[in-house]
Image 1 (cartoon, rainbow, N blue to C red):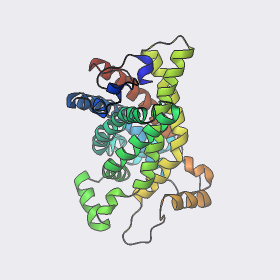
Image 2: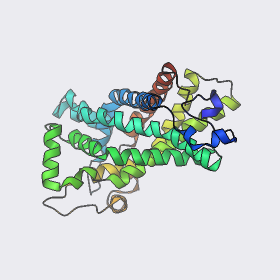
Image 3: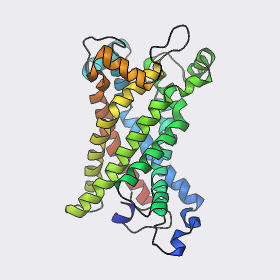
Image 4: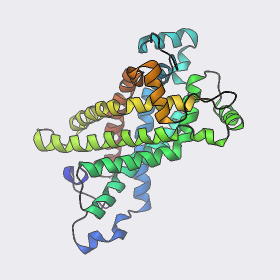
Length: 314
């Protein structure tokens, strides 16, 4: 996609097949370009997160219903009304500070690493097919979430506790559960991030290429909107079960009791056995209601910011 829609610029070199293009030094853009590249990515994700954060709170509450047992589930509307009645409107923004912090770091790394990784694969294998895009997205997502997992753990803990304070929550978590608690659920989180980034970015990338080739759409808002809608649907279907398992593991307490789940596979097995297969999609509608708009806002904003910064289109 990067070379399909608009002419490449110096920030992302394209393999031409000659000796100069194959020189690994050409793969290293100026530091200012790298900073702009990561900055536009992080800012677009942070703005999208701020808009959709209430849906993320609802998603977490939906996923934590009837842990370890079957029973009637409240829908997103029921959870929303319950939160409004018991905790008030502010509960919809629980964990917003770590969520925005993580968005800048994780979003900047996730979107920022995708294109350089794809260029490296192109240089190494002389190919930019859909498998290369999937592999590039998976690598970018997994690395990004491994580095930012502590912020995600704190965010989810705050979303379940309206009285918690971020710093106090971190201190209590480390003192009671050890420093490793900050990387609780990092395995499923990396799998989810790899699946999300691979499905989201590769789908967006490939959808843009197909639409430009087979329809009358040209580079612009309509093309970005259509491509991001498709990416949002695909990424939700793929990542909803992984997201539910990640949430359960991150909220699991280690001290004072035996752990319910040993790892991600054990968590998935117990959820299916005790709560039924559809339990893996608890909060699935909330995930799409959040991830769909977030995907659209992220890509549309990122494309606009990149254009304003003088970078080429995604």
